[in-house]
Length: 351
Image 1 (cartoon, one colour):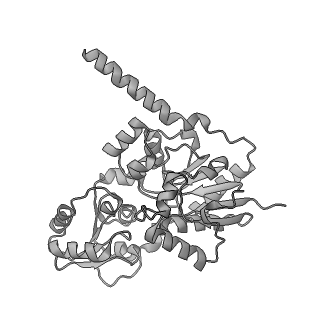
Image 2: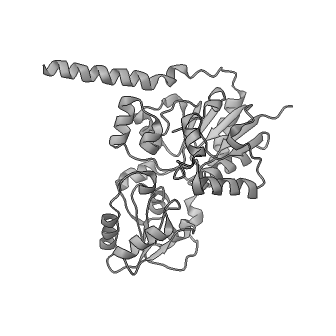
Image 3: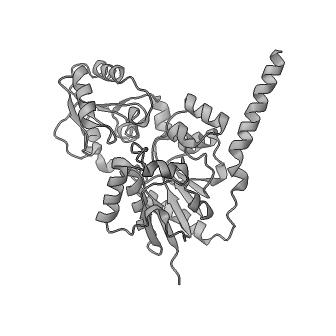
């Protein structure tokens, strides 16, 4: 029998390791890996190194390529093979033109940004989804199934416009077994962990001074340890932390899981770190309500999410239904026309 060919598109190290876990559950398939990539003008921008702050370049791409090579995985850089039975990706803000003709499964990577003005402007004018970052996850509609972390996330994505018929609640690798990190050792204990984000590195605004001083207020007399986001410039951001919190320890290239296991409280914004922290009973201070975090919290299935996603893959590979996404592909333009009509009606009513 001919083995089905499957392409796994990585991105950040979290995304790439998730893809690898799913691939391990599909031993009957011939699997290939690639870093995240684009087509058209965005592809050219990556070649000109204009998008080094994204998962298509810089440290993200270097770490993904290193992971692929060090794990002896087959590399098909930017899917040049162009002959696949199925494609997996952890993000659909950008869908490379070549993979649109293949069966595709989107896998949720973790927390998604809340809708802000970028989200609403992007939807209103039908702009590229990447303009609004991960708040637009799932809204390409260019996939057959979307595997999500929990029923709470399913509701969230449906509310934002994802087709309910395409969503499968499977749990997601790397976020489905928080119990295993409970007893991890770390050199410090009983501290307040501050997990920063790469908001500014991805061209958004953040008042880091306000964020750090708020963490200091929350911590009181407890020690503060800051874990920088991997995409942040360590030297620059460390100096910034020391300016406002001079006695604080700052880490970057270390695993955050042992830090979460041994802290008393976590202070962050929209990071996925809120999920293991809340699951382990830590105090969590973020921009998301605690009850909402509990509702969204990924299914804890003892690390079997990759196996559940593999079942979805086999179902899709066995399907003889033709790929037809034209109707959903035009949804952006339909939304744009509806929004313009609504705006014109309001203006006419005011007159």
